[in-house]
Amino acid sequence: ESITPNRSVVHSRIRHSGRVIFGLAALSIVSAASYHIWPSNRTARQTENGVVQPENLGPRTYPTFVEVLKKLDLSQDRQLSDRPGKTLTRSPVKGKTVLTFDICSPYVGSELAGALKSLELISQKKEFPTMVFVSGAALKEPQLREAVTKLAALSHISIQPHGLKHRPCTSEHTELIYGQKPTGSLEAAYREIVGGAEVIETLTGKIPRYFRSPGLFSDRLIEQMVRELGM
Image 1 (tube, rainbow, N blue to C red):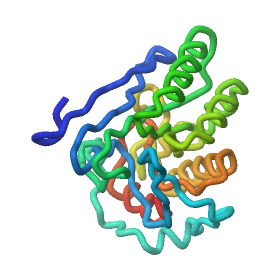
Image 2 (image 1 turned 60 degrees about the vertical axis):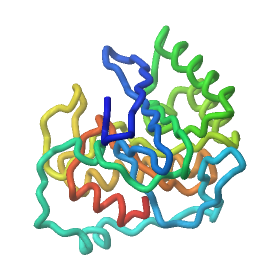
Image 3 (image 1 turned 45 degrees about the horizontal axis):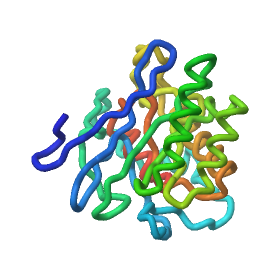
Image 4 (image 1 turned 135 degrees about the vertical axis):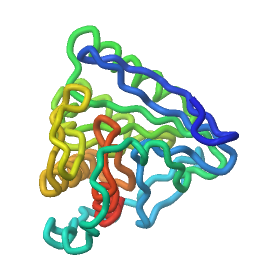
């Protein structure tokens, strides 16, 4: 699938609960494609392998919902869209191919075995800077939590939030998205985003800089909220 001329996307699939979850590898000389990944302006360092890792600045205190709400432009179009997923943003690793994968929910049986095997393969591919987006729900599975904790210690891998309960973040849309119940309000979206970020920071000891909305759909207000939260 082509996003823009001279930039291509390779999809890596992990199947769970009858759905296919896509990880993206954006190939570009100067930038990587964002699929609901919004960068923060917080201090970061670039490792030898090229992955941008946030500095360990200690536990982060996020703005309250009321504080964020005051900064939002409520006149924006709230139509559900995957537009952010088709927009190129500043590359987390200039001049590098960046692989991204999603760990969405607690896998079971053969799906769990397949997910764990995929994570093991990711850990071995040190030549590829990799971002793994993990939901708080997925980390309830002990084996997944252990595997993700090990990945977080590797210099070529960055663990980033994928929501607290893996609910698509929408400001008012309430219909199911790929069988998942969206947040449907700004306050619920705030809890989903901040809750997921806090879980990841607790696990890794690093402040999240990126966010991927579950279901890959969202709206402009959610985009602005994520930026106001420093991601």
